[in-house]
Length: 522
Image (tube, rainbow, N blue to C red):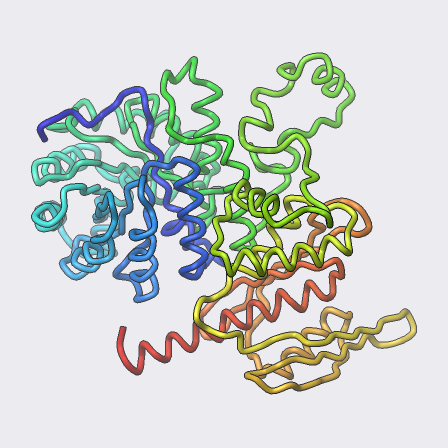
């Protein structure tokens, strides 16, 4: 390369929420949802967005392509195996990106090479070099990953990385694919690779860690301390198995301990909390109350000694401020007298950039809610957007709830009567169950003919007070397809019905799309 591309003072943030994060069970997103997240990631200030694995499905290809067209500042990548078909598909998906790139990987550990790839070391080196060389003829920015690097032979890694640098790779990624590494060990590995790989000073070294032992953030910071200048992570740490490195944890650790690490990031930290909340709303995966940085208890103090200390001086027990990650001092936002302009501005602050039609629908829902509640909170507005706006484009809902009546007492079997519009026809069904939610779901199942299994059901109050909205999230599975549904309402039974129907509509779309692809091809 003609110029040194490494800035030793900046750690690049590579966000893989839309690719590795989406592989988390129950975190699947449709195209519109991915675009909403990508826009917020751009606002957050991440340097790289891995938009998907274009060769894995037609839906993933279209999502990568759409994100590539929408995003202007961050680099947009697609993942690809070291295979010609994958690389061609990835290149096609990112061709309209302002800053396109491709992320090529192949496994390098003996266990992966023997049992998964069934290739020798020399064959793996040849495949890696061929893939990078092939892609380099058509695109400049290539990242190369040695899958399962933390369980690979160090000297073999040195050889592989040296060869792909010569072939044209710009960023080299050292993945702890199985979350196996210990920080001291992983930091030493990164240092060894930088010190012994030919051309190491001409590339960016990256760390991609998983959280199987709860060490993803610690391992990523160890890599940074030993020379890595890119960290690959996800919002809320979502990802396969126990998840990936948490973006918010790494960024705030670097910011808070800059005196020790002597590096910084380009992230606008005030956008962290809105981004984490947005992803939680879209996926239906709640943020644990004790989650570092963004959990509800992260800035809560109950012990008397702690309360006394914080009141006297915040830094006695707070190493960062709520405002630094975007938690507003006053959570009350709007009321029934709030206008469209103020509502639109608040949506933007929360990370939603809506088209005019979507904005109008959201505003009508907001006004309806404001008439029922004295106080409308940010969480209420997020729930409105999650339920009303993040719908599948161009595909009318197969199922619509028209009426719900439930009855329950200590002396009678809980019952529900549900009226719905099913594929354009109005139908009504009664049902009984173990509880009113069970009765309601049984009635909806009869009406829709659904055969999906309810994998997960969760409910929480979005905000305080007896008039608080209830937020329900459910995960359904049918024929190997998993989707999440969300519903919010001041009546928790209604919220439950809306969440279930939301998930059923997503299932219908996914099954319809699969049939079209099988019949007509992608």
